[in-house]
Image 1 (cartoon, rainbow, N blue to C red):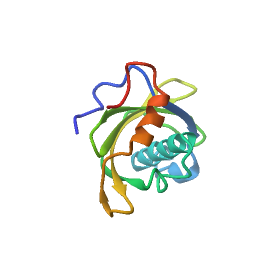
Image 2: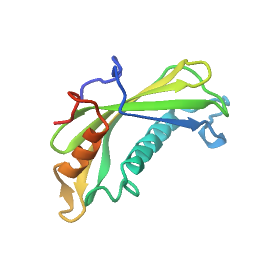
Image 3: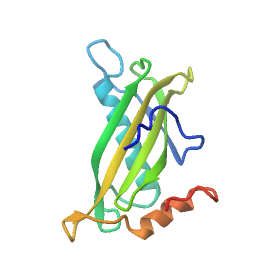
Image 4: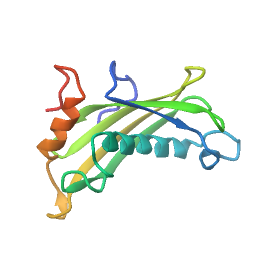
Length: 151
């Protein structure tokens, strides 16, 4: 996977707001680096729910397995901080989707983290990785503006 964190997308496909909770904190009383990934994954779940899927386990006959992640923790966020989490699907392969995230402190507009995630589509009937179903790609592209479609 190319290093997605050097440059952020110019447009985002999906945006959500999440609040830093007690379970997200480390001993220093701020957002733990490992919990940044949890927040990004929750945003992906919200995205698929927005597309009409109950969860990532019911996505057109399969589900997504996380293959690769990168987290760049940039600045602190404390309990109660509202985080604007937004991503674009930057690349797609026949069987994978790559997500590039920017996580922003909604009040200060400071960037808190950048995250990249590569997910692999796994067909539950075949019990192996498979091509991403065209119905899913069509739903994703339905949210995009012309010229920015996943191929």
